[in-house]
Image 1 (cartoon, helix red, strand yellow):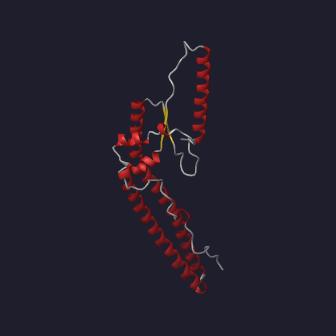
Image 2 (tube, one colour):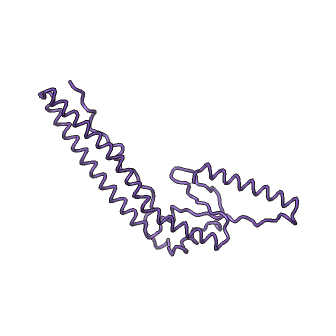
Length: 216
């Protein structure tokens, strides 16, 4: 959830609570309202303990490795052709030299495009694999909230390199164990690694052995 929206939502809750308290003080007999029950959990942690987590991680690793291997092959091809160009450039005619330079520039462009495409494909694969599991987790959270009378459930993890949504919260409001029970997952018996968004393959920032040579 967007952090700005979360802060605005929290402010609205606080303002609503203060307003309700003021109304209750002024007219306790007619404006009493049910207290809000707030809970929290960590969806990323729950996801990492599901039976699907290990398979998701394996599939992402396979695709990332394939992309990295292809990138290395393309970079090696560029290095070899660039080396051959350097050795024979002095003896090449202008036409041949221009042709070799165009070939090197084209290969460099293909490497960069491959890097971008590979990264986009990996991100899409992550979403394809993870979204069904997240939807299942959300259904479990919805059921836990309804069965236990929670008005709002917060996700403790705001995402990588961000400040958590809740900095302080009572342990009794942590619904994680209830969600695990609803999912039929025992985290003490799960050896699956945490499933996080895929790291970059390195393809998008591929470097070439040297700048494409200028025509002499």
